[in-house]
Image (cartoon, rainbow, N blue to C red; front, side, top):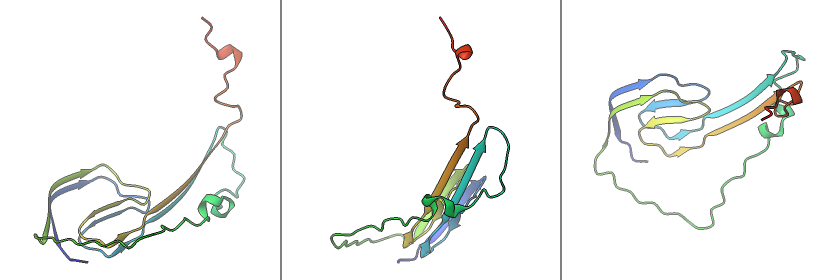
Length: 134
């Protein structure tokens, strides 16, 4: 990996959260990970065993690895050893995202989210008295 010098004049970042990375400068390997279990209930009632990631296959199944069928050859020449950024404004990064100014060899980011909504009544099925009759 060819090292370069990163120069940033002005940066305004409001929020970096949930396994995200904000880095100015070189790195070799970045592997942010994020797991989220969001449970939304119409009536607040908790059983006490919520939050078990292992109960949901999305959190423990293996991601397929990329299959390369032919060799890849990359040749690059960075004539200027500087990465110059004048100004950046970022409102927020989240869920294993990367804001990186610099050289990097590999980024392997992963986010897994299981969002559950539990309702007493089906919110998509309207009752007769709620229908607009024209």
